[in-house]
Length: 175
Image (cartoon, rainbow, N blue to C red; front, side, top):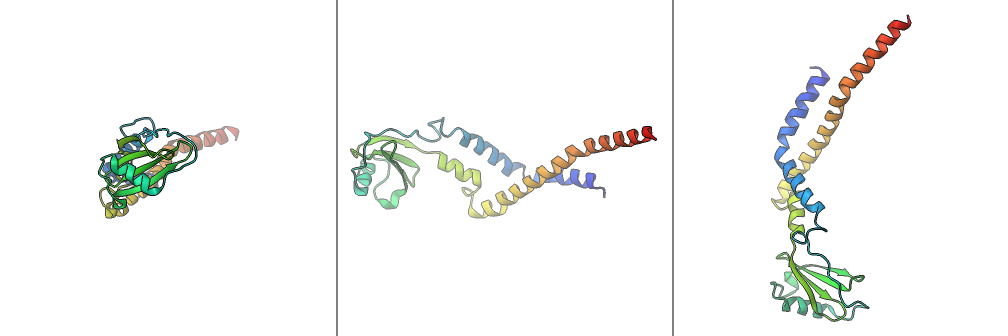
């Protein structure tokens, strides 16, 4: 079988095989491109009173607990995101709620639901399962890379043929 025919078949079947996972990655990637611009995806970082942090971790937890967003203990906290330049610490709950606490006063400056982490897990496939991430999304990425190479080859093929014909015609004229 000629290389060009094999490449076309690989390109066509590869595209069909990864169509759905690729659609998920593209759509979630588009949403992630707007996460800093869209508060619906990721809440903007509020500003605290400023100055050096004066509150303890226990005061951060107490402020988050008082916000009424389902954060009652450290087991409910997924992570803390400390922003010293803004004077806040973001308390991200496992339930995807985010409570922003002023590091100088301990006051809650903002609470919002954070969808960006969910969209990121959909984007990398781990939301479905670790098996899907490893055995569907990773191979899809490898197939997409192969599609890129076969696509470049299929694009170059007619250009190369035309170039050879021009050279052959030019060398025939020179004789």
